Image (cartoon, rainbow, N blue to C red):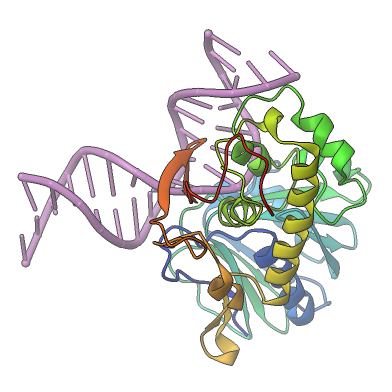
Length: 290
DNA sequence: CAGGTCTCCTGCTAGC
DNA sequence: TGCTAGCAGGAGACCT
């Protein structure tokens, strides 16, 4: 079985966000062996952040996978004695095969009796952290920096309001800030802001309570639907080349013309990120007319 | 503290 | 045709 994230028509827009990571989590959970890891090959060690290459191997070899969790865009592999936290960043992907030969951009390969798992990452931006299960991984970086997901109990209008107060930066930057709200990346933030008809450059503190409520509701809907669709850019080679069906449901990201008013969509830069929005339908100051 | 800028890295593309 | 400079982007480091 292959689990891969491919480039689709939107160049540079294939980064895994929460729905993609969740899809990868489910597929790995279904396919990875629960027997001890027999070997680990490291071809590019800078992926590993908090322990040495030697420690990474010695502490993981012999460990059996118990479960895979997820927090925001982080995958959390739980073994007998250790916890491996993996972030795919822009282009990280895993593939599991009975036997694989490491190819270009395969940086770490885990082996079991039953198969091999390769971590492949063209841009080498992905990260891995290794912790002991005795440590509390939730109170130290990177997980300590991850704020609540839209689905979490901790996510509420009152919470977001408190985090938005006094913030002058664009709302898009605040929604991309994983310490405030986790799981939304560049594509989904554009989608959410278009659907709630708020301009990405609207100052955060000017977003009303009513708008915050709508942002939460729409974030849940967009992410939930994307998860149900298997993400935007995921495909499994075992079932041909099907990419995530949410790709077809994008309304604004990568589009040329506004699906509501027909005006050409603007491509601007907000907080250093390529941003798609409709100047006609997304307001900076006005209350959205939903 | 808030927020801006730089860094990491490679593949693609515009421009010559 | 072949080359190169420039760009994209999640999150942390660093600076103001």
